[in-house]
Amino acid sequence: MVDNSQGHGIYAPDALLTRDMNFNPAGSQPRLRDGWFINGLGVKVVQHMIFPADHPTFPDKPKGMKQILTERGLFRAKLMMQCKKPDCNPDATDCCAKRIIDLQPDFKEQKSLVHETIEAAGHLCIMLPKYHCELNFIEFFWGAMKRYL
Image (cartoon, rainbow, N blue to C red; front, side, top):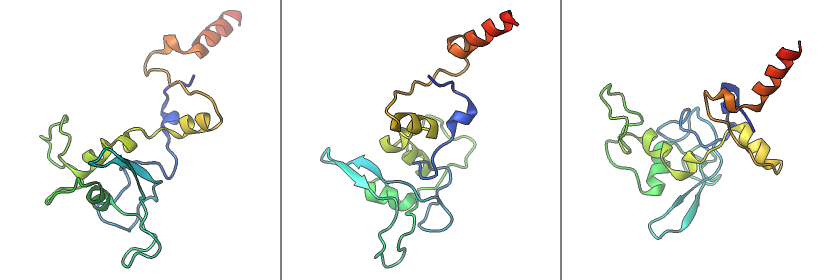
């Protein structure tokens, strides 16, 4: 069981996160691990987030949001990278490239580095809910320690 502190929200350098991605290919952006999506036939398709080494324009470079959405069949003309409007509907699902990608199942299922490390060791990771210290077992220990001292 792991408490839900800020430090436990750190992600691996190749995690599927849009926060540091560019809209267009290459440039200064992280090299993400492979993702996946379900195509129109209901088949799970692995999507490489890096262009292949023999690509004519961007060999071995990160793809960017536009290319990822194009390969998934979700890109449309005039799509912005991120909403800039203050009146943007927070419940919108297709207002900008960042929102569309963040709602994709492979990006939504991205786990923190602590979570991935615990599961890689063969254990089950249970994250405690935020702001519920009464459920955190360490609080009982500290309470007993304070009484003892």
